[in-house]
Length: 362
Image 1 (tube, helix red, strand yellow):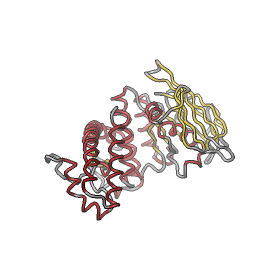
Image 2 (cartoon, one colour):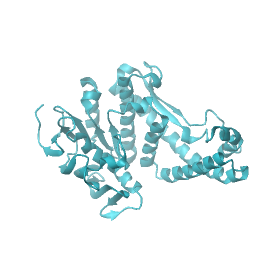
Image 3 (spheres, one colour):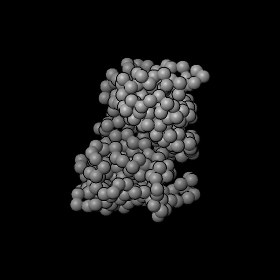
């Protein structure tokens, strides 16, 4: 999927913008606070239904306005087809459209708009909470495993009920149907996670060697959330949850299961990811993102859109050069921002919320 035209309305400081994007690298140049990041944010909203920037959902709506909108005309199937997609943030929540039809659920929109993003906060992916890393893993699965979302929702529904029973001291017989439901869903989407880790592991090694060979050999460390428990016992996952009810009641939540999984990218020349410097964490997060881009392309035939916010302040010139060369080889559509001249196929100048096509002097 590639965006041919992006239309933004009342998003942060952008009142109205219509941007004809190129198929390759699109650079957005301008001073700080001009609205460059808001252009990337608009694309991100199409793929996730929330922003990568801090603040509540309502802060994305321009001051004095009631609704922020993003529409995109996209080319699909290697340019053989075209769709029109959109998302709006209004007072009553999010609304999505595909080809003029209102969506009952936004997941259909997100499936049409795969987006990967590297931004100033991306280093937290390596050093922050495991929840962010699980979300990244499950984003990949959502796009390449057709049944993943249904299994994930079933598991989350059962987990919510089990945790409620734990907190209210429910009797054991109330737990059993939910634990069986959780176990069935968990087995299915844990198999999907295992497959995905098997796919992305060798690719991450190649990306690390190409982008940051100075860090040594890259390897993914995946923990499934069960802390080495033997899941091959006759009663399997449901049996373990049954045996651990008393301990879970003491803690107030379900302590084991795929909702506690984690994964990180390590390097042979570095210590534990928890102790990465900010720069090392950025490179590790970038390698993981690029590996997901490659898996997506391999399984679906085309790479996702790649967003790179304030790239010059996040990477030195050498790593920037390696990254952009890598992305051009993938034939990925890229949106990158900076305060100075960018090596882009198509340039836009952004100032006071206005997006103007044309080259910009540094």
